[in-house]
Amino acid sequence: MDYTAGAIDPARPWIRDERDAPAEMNWRNTLLNPFGKTYKLHFTRAWTFMFLGRVLLYIVPSFIAMIAGIAGVSTDGLNAPVNLLLFSVPAVLLPFAVFTLVTEYTSFVVHMRRLTEAGRSAFMAVIVLVPLVLGLIAYALGTQGGAAQYRQMHTPANTEAVEAKKETEAGDEGEDAASKDGQAAAGPPARDPRRAAMMEMSERELAMQAGMGLAFPIWWLASFGAMLWSLMYVARLPNGGQGQFRTGSHMTPEEIARGV
Image 1 (cartoon, rainbow, N blue to C red):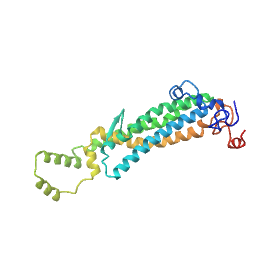
Image 2 (image 1 turned 90 degrees about the vertical axis):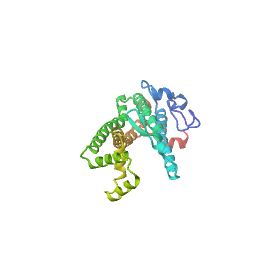
Image 3 (image 1 turned 180 degrees about the vertical axis):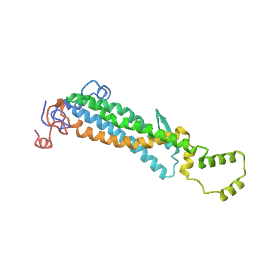
């Protein structure tokens, strides 16, 4: 099934295997149907689509929000937490989160089909789900830690919690501003703003924040490892499991230069 340069697709002379012809690719089956086979170049196209989609949906909105913040535009709405299944993500990253969850499944399907076509065990496709599993475990551990931190912060013995409660009660009693200013001047220094913000969170909010803080970096690192495995192994498997283990459609740069 090898052909001369440009015989299959004049716009892509490096395609030498007719099974890799872009016109023959069925995107719906490639991304959604785990029971089938996907050829080498079709796998690469699907993988590139999923990878670039994640990168663009993360970088572009984040960059826009950063520029807006520098320009003095309020970004409270962009950074407002939005609940998505078990998670809470900033509104600006909601499209990224939804796309990522969907492509966790489609990535598994694409890898399963490619491994099957190349004569390898389709079970190896579970490797691409490892980042998600590790992220969920880290999220569960993080939420437990966040909930424990909330309970510790709001125990009666905690001086910060007692102080916050007294300040709230004093405000409810309607003390005048001058009296409050005098107490503040004579009292202890102001609390850490970050800790004060945490004190105002509900137990669920603090738990979710801690869970995402632990899960996100672990998911990123594991995803990087899975990406290397995809690029260095799965994407280089020859069609049908026969042929050289290399990048491309069974055609070397030297062959392209010679026009064979």
